[in-house]
Length: 155
Image (cartoon, rainbow, N blue to C red; front, side, top):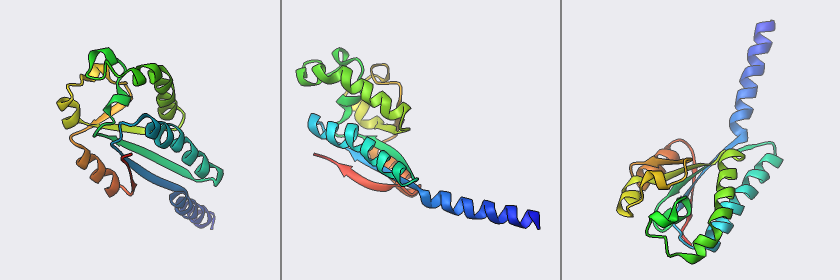
């Protein structure tokens, strides 16, 4: 009888745990600073807190491509973004907030390898937390196949 009760408890707990976890993949292509601040830096924190307040977990992945590469470069002077004064003035703040998203909130960032190479971005010039996918489409397909809801951020 004890085994039955324990098994029943484990089964119900696993069902509830699955219901409590939400998943989202952001298709991030915007190079606009305000969009980045609002949708990525602030938006993800707000969404994570919303679900945490409901005792649910939110797993977040961001696939980076299009004009969004520049936000994930730690050594801007080594890249084509070296003259972007608006980005240069905000970079230290952005770096801290991105690191917080990965360390505190468990956000995964995936960069398109095709675009990284096309933009001549060396991996050593990117933040260490950035992971790589062969291309953005494959990254998005993989996440959606794993049950992630798709949300585009283009502007």
